[in-house]
Length: 384
Image (cartoon, rainbow, N blue to C red; front, side, top):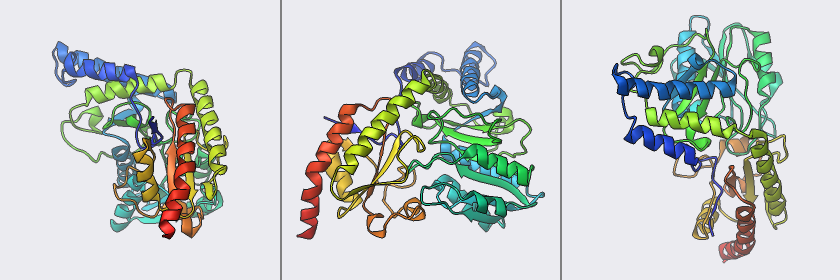
């Protein structure tokens, strides 16, 4: 048996996504910038995808820019907004537990002369709102925080954060990295005071290599990619029609019967957490109820290195992660785990398990059964 429990890294595509990707590669393969019929057909797929994505956000299709994925969306939002508004101020804010595609961009901008404030989180992984409010001043042009943490599944109160930002400085732009949240939550940027929002296709059963950036109408932002002027000059380059069509289809399907999908996922998470807590020397990090994301569980295993356990599970057909698969193939001590106060001895003994709409109870039970068998053996071996 196999148990794929690494859905925060990537997901299996929906059948409908596969079908539209193949169709746009093999039949309707025109370039949307071409003026002939093949080009018009391709352009139709792009427009339809923008409409599908916009509908899920209660936004306008013109506010959707397609990208190569979450990393590009985050880079475009942060660099584009910071540069566009630098005359108003060069103070920008983020948290201490952001994904590398945000955290490293802030590091780059810091080297460019921007003043960066890093807001810490509490032991549950939530942004410290009092420190955020105190940090915003008249020169703050951008705040960027994640909606759902990709390692422990903590959920930031995005609406409250947006409210704090706009009350303190209405001109400060609010960017949300929603890569782990889009498809899991119903997000309404206008209601939550979000100016910029990043999402990725392969986290919601769409293709890899495609994502989008929501840019609220009127938001001051400059492009970071230049060329033929596609997508109103904000993201030049030939459209990835197959990827975009697949992204649109995945967005449509993930939000169909959405409440039921999420309910089932929370049930799986509850079952998994209970099984983990029943194992000796095993602890679950962060919140685990419906005040956390439905698909992420971070688990510490005393006396077993995460890399060793990861490969032992792989040998039994179980696939998990030792951290963020997006950052490196080489495991490193997690800044997120340190940030939320995980015990030092567990920092290199923690795995992330993550679920999707395809995850089954049988996979959950199989994983727990294998862990129960493996852990005593691995601990005994380490002591030898």
